[in-house]
Image 1 (cartoon, rainbow, N blue to C red):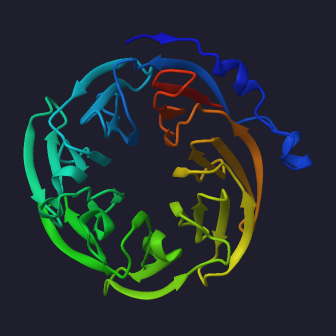
Image 2 (cartoon, rainbow, N blue to C red):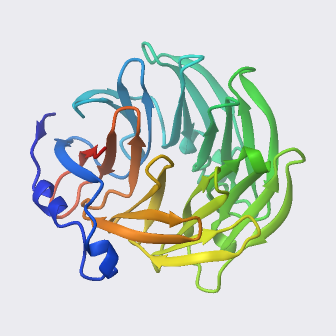
Length: 347
C-alpha cells in the first residue's frame, strides 16, 4: 500500500458544478484533496469510519473483505488489516474503555476488540438472523460519546423480520440495557438530540423519519415528504435543533425543524450513505456514490450548496475536526482501484 497524489487533486479544484446556485459559484470549497492511499488488495464495498485520536489511527469497515482496515490518521497511510469478521458495518471507538465496537451483520452481533492490540474482548448477541440463512443485521448505529451509549439498528428485512429494533449497549456496563421497537424492516441512520430528549431514525422502507422519546423509548411521531425515497443518511444539529435527512433517489436533502416541518429541500448527490456536520463552520457534508455535496448553513432555515466534489464512488466519509482532516473511502470501480481520499479542511 502507498500514498500518491491523485487525479482527484485536479478534479477537486473544480468543485462547483454548473447546476449550483449563483451564490455557491462564488464560494470556494472548504476542503482540498491532498493525497490518496491506494488499496489494490481490498475488494467490495466499505461502510463506516471511526478514529482513535490518542494513537492517531483511522479505522474503516470493509464488508466484503470481512475486515477492519487501519490507517495513519495524519497521513492516510495503510497500516494493518484486522480480520475475523463476517460483514462489518458500523464502527465506533470508546477511548474510556480503549475498545473498538464493530457491528457485525453476518454474525448478528456487536464485537468488541482492544484498541491496543485488537484482540477480541467480547461478543454481544443481537437479533439473530443467522437461522434464516440471510443474517446481515446489525447495520446502522450511533454512538452517544457523552453518555457512552451505542444505539444499534438490527432485525428487519436482513434478518427476514417485519420489524426492527434499536438496541442500546452501555459501554460502562458492558452490556445491552434496553431497546426501541421500530415498526419497519429497514432501519438506517440514527441521530440524537439530548437537549430535546429525542432520538431520530430513518425507517427507509416506510419512507419515514421516526421520532422517539429517549426516556420512554416510545415513538412520538413520524415525518415524511411526498418525494422522499430511500432515506438513508441522517444527522442532527443539536444546537439549533435541525434534523438533516438524505434521500437517495432522487438525491435530495431535507432539513426538518423540531416540529417536523421541512424548512428547506435541496438537490444533492445520489446514493448517500454518510453525513458529517461541522457545527463550528456551519457546514454539512453529504457523501454518496455520485460524489460529495457540501452545504453552508446561512440561517437555521436556509442552506446553500457550496461545492460538489467527485469522489470516485466513495459514499462513506468522516470529518475529524480535531485534526482538520476529512476522509472518503471508495471501492474499486471501472476506472480506478479502491482507495482512501484524504482532504485538508481549510481553517
